[in-house]
Length: 343
Ligand SMILES: Nc1ncnc2c1ncn2[C@@H]1O[C@H](COP(=O)(O)OP(=O)(O)OP(=O)(O)O)[C@@H](O)[C@H]1O
Ligand SMILES: O=P(O)(O)OC[C@H]1O[C@](O)(CO)[C@@H](O)[C@@H]1O
Ligand SMILES: [Mg+2]
Image (cartoon, rainbow, N blue to C red; front, top):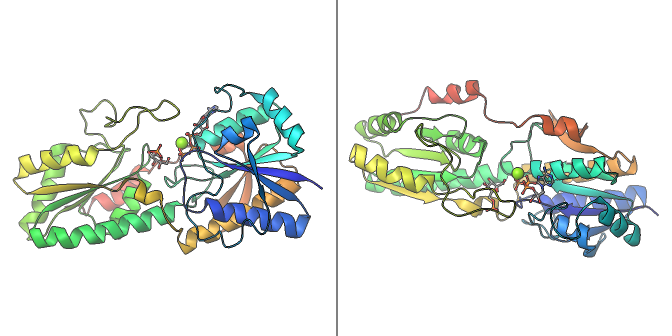
């Protein structure tokens, strides 16, 4: 009987458990395959740290946030014992025929390299950031947008009561999708994204015009947004597990600048990891479950080196090369479409 291993890697994301459930249920029921889970991303694969995954283990999982497997930013090449030779040995010892890596762009890059080095591996795209070009939407994004939209709704009532300018900072390192969608949904007066620098003068002009007609200004900013004179995105929290600067705090930088420049009392809220926590929305549960079932088909067909992806309403297969070719950022036209009504 064929056996496959699943891992979740990179930042977690609502819907990961629904993918695991979808893959295990279809794999067992339709193909008679068995599954196990590697713990904490690539670490479990490199160290052979596994848990059994069967119908009983995945019962009731589709509504649960996080990942029952754990996740990390552990490097499959850089860490001690890493590298394809050791990983091949782990897979042989465990009698695992192939690996399903659920992750973002970094995880897919690592999976592509491992595939090139002879490991049987496929991928499932995930990220709340929705910035993977291979797929129209990633699961987790809709949940993050819902949470951020609710935060805007709540900030507006307190902002209106005090006639304050409220600044909400959401995630989005290189891509402003969460800011754009939640900002549109919540009727923000300005949306600031990494793809588009806006001057402090322009931001304050929007804020002032809102206040001038008796409203409390609402500004949504993505963590990766830069003012024109900033060389790099705001970072004061050191590096992440993969040595990249941890972002966060641009909202706290902007709020006093807006207050000083406009004279309007301003407060900042950083939404942070609340965006990634808790139950996935119905949309994300459906997408994640379909992707899980589709990846069980993919391993049944031994489609190594490929990922599942959403195109329109269909789940399709794309190879790692193609999947990684495009980083999906907010196109200028889409930003300009909403920018015309800022202020
Ligand atoms: N080019 C690469 N080659 C080898 N390993 C990589 C590469 N890029 C990333 N990795 C490994 O994969 C792990 C997961 O990648 P990363 O931290 O970028 O998260 P991700 O999968 O992109 O998810 P997200 O960005 O949504 O949190 C990294 O911590 C790193 O160990
Ligand atoms: O969980 P960490 O390491 O704080 O990562 C935060 C990053 O992960 C993401 O949530 C997903 O890539 C980004 O939006 C954010 O910059
Ligand atoms: Mg990434």
